[in-house]
Length: 231
Image (cartoon, rainbow, N blue to C red; front, top):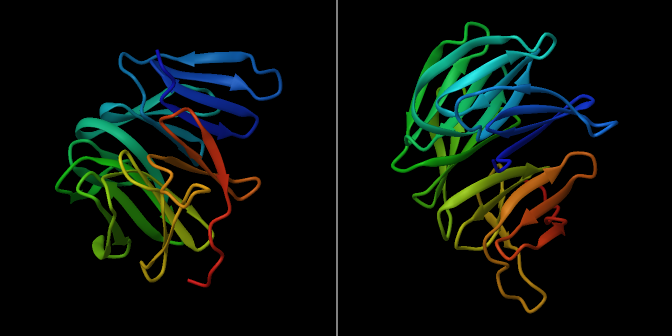
């Protein structure tokens, strides 16, 4: 099946599809396959555990033995995004919620309702951001798990990433937008050379080079340097 999630983990590359495959980054050979009955939409690792978002639940494996651990069950639809915030695991789902789990006990602590599906959750400097199909990016106070600020995007938001002091959002039908993480001000809309918006974008940060990467429905990939501005 199609690859719907990727994660670098030390000298391994993990790919999510119908289950999870573990690859050697040195030899590019498959080392093992973690079998699931359903597809995988998201991957994150923390403290020796790999978490995979699938339909209705989050499954977990020990990254030393690759033995299966207890699943986290509460969602009622696909879990499209996972993020770690301190000792919490955040999961965004098409069931219109973000759930907050205690990583130590693997118990559900909070369920944060949204008016539409949540396709991405990211965390930066103790602040969480959720991307929702209602065209609003919610900024969450992670001490109280209440909405600290709402950012209104021009289109439903499918993808988020943080680069330095800016948040970047990509939508299915609208432009890629750049926001201040502290004030919530929209700093820029990424443009083509003719100053037209670049259209739908999947957004990702290359951690090694601190470069913004956007992927588009026309098959193109672009590299960007967002505005460097004090937040």
